[in-house]
Picture 1 (cartoon, rainbow, N blue to C red):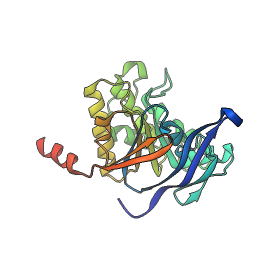
Picture 2 (cartoon, rainbow, N blue to C red):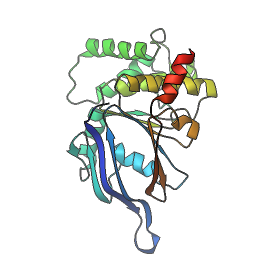
Picture 3 (cartoon, helix red, strand yellow):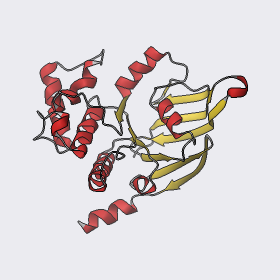
Picture 4 (cartoon, helix red, strand yellow):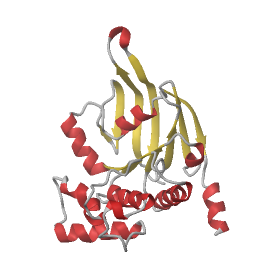
Length: 244
């Protein structure tokens, strides 16, 4: 981790509805996440964690407050501008994988590059990079397999490779182990932690306290506000590695 701030929110608020039907999903959330951090966001249903994830992921805008991503204030950007920021700066990992069916792992990983207007790699270079990403997540021998030919854990690894392909400043993982059995879930969490050890900045939304233990820091939300912050540190990682 270094001192560069990737995420900064200042008094972030999100209100839905009008008049008597208003619902305050976020109420003055201020936080910072540094480059290289692995942070979990937790909270019960209705706590605001999904709303916060959507704003951090440039999928929606706050009603009030500021969101500064990688030094750029994006609070008031248009939907079109937010889409450009999403593709250039963010990588997403979803609970349901969101892979294209009847499309190989290699082509699924390459998809974000197709939407990059400032694409710097030609097709051959892009394919080579996608191969490297699949090898990074342990799927170098599955590049031509389609999603239905892969296990759930393997599909999530493809999704992680896809999230990394455009060299994002931030990975957002939304319940990344929610559809997996416990063994596959641990493998994915260990992979995310390995990526974090290599300097990748990760924000993971989860409802599971055991999953959150894999991160450095856990931000607990309640009623749209930060309720508490728990620091895990690297102790758990050191202990697990020493047992291998």
